[in-house]
Length: 204
Image 1: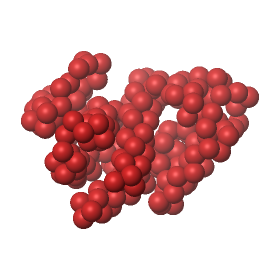
Image 2: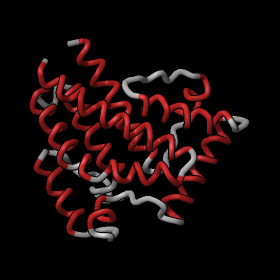
Image 3: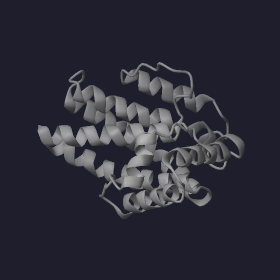
């Protein structure tokens, strides 16, 4: 079970990181780890290339503080000012910021036992969806939910929700960002890899 716990912890860590990055909250520790080369995740060429792209961006700055500021500036430019890539499923499906799609996703996560505690972003926001998976994993780690039941929820949400629209957004983002091009490449590689990890965990 220790091996499974390690896998769950790493998955939760990455989903939480992606949730933060797609909110524009850049953990300085993450930037520092990029600079120091502490992040050595493998599993796909996209994961490795995404990490390389992000590291290249931060290494061009004089300090981790400067890198964080520039990443936050890029986030504002891409998502708040120009809307270069959509961040919600509603924008992809309905071409609207909030609508029927948001309500459908909210109902879906409520049925899975997830209590939405913030109105900062809608439930169909990419950050909220990554956070939902991270929460499911955390509940399983803490023993608040049966491992198998949690696993099935994760598989269902990843396959039938996240993978139906997020890869399209990531491909679009790769074309228009700098640091966030690396984030998009990394996230795309991670989601594909995690899909396989979940299928393997189901067999354990």
